Image 1 (cartoon, one colour):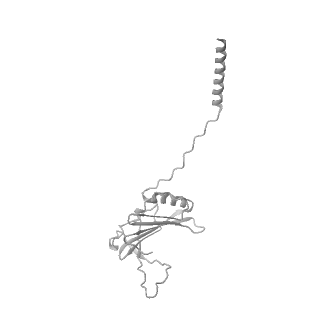
Image 2 (cartoon, helix red, strand yellow):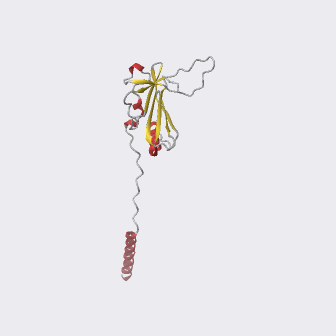
Image 3 (cartoon, helix red, strand yellow):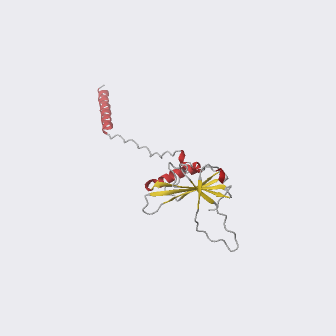
Length: 190
């Protein structure tokens, strides 16, 4: 019995020592949750830029437009060749569709043979956030996130091809995200 009592005391002492050590040990720090990507609202969907379906006649566009002249650096046509069939582009008078939670600084609709064939929009983004906004939006558009700082984002949805890129100038406070939507059924030459 004496041996049992000694063994019981040793067991209780060991339990007491382990309990004291457990209480004295530092508690693990809670694991920080990974950063949550910003919620991209419906204005981030590039489909909002289509004010009419591609192929729509110029006269059927529901907004007031004024023609703009686009200057391109293109090689002159070869001797005897006809000049390229350039699309006619128009800017919207008044408000353009809200895109990426902003009003575009430029919004053009272009027509080839009086049919809507291209839409181009430019939005200004804070320079410090532009790469992340671009990556998040491109991930939404392509369903595959691109690495931050990727130079371009391209894809297609049915008969609409899209191409997006970031532009920034030295010492600028903002960057410009430029998106071009082209119809594959009613193509406009660039």
